[in-house]
Image (cartoon, rainbow, N blue to C red; front, side):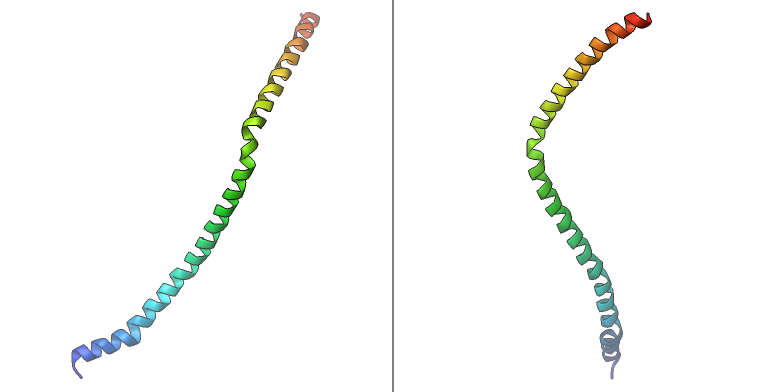
Length: 84
């Protein structure tokens, strides 16, 4: 048997199983990452449906803030007269 034959035999018996084992150790976590990414994507798509009402909710929040500010000013005036 020539040196090429011995090299080919070593390649088939030693190197190929090692490469297959390394490939399996990489593909397992890769599939778990892919599953987690798919879950994150589906959650993000579901969240988009909840954000459609955001402009109306922000407008309502702005109105409430204006009302609270007006009430605080009306309250602060008499309190400053009482304390000052």
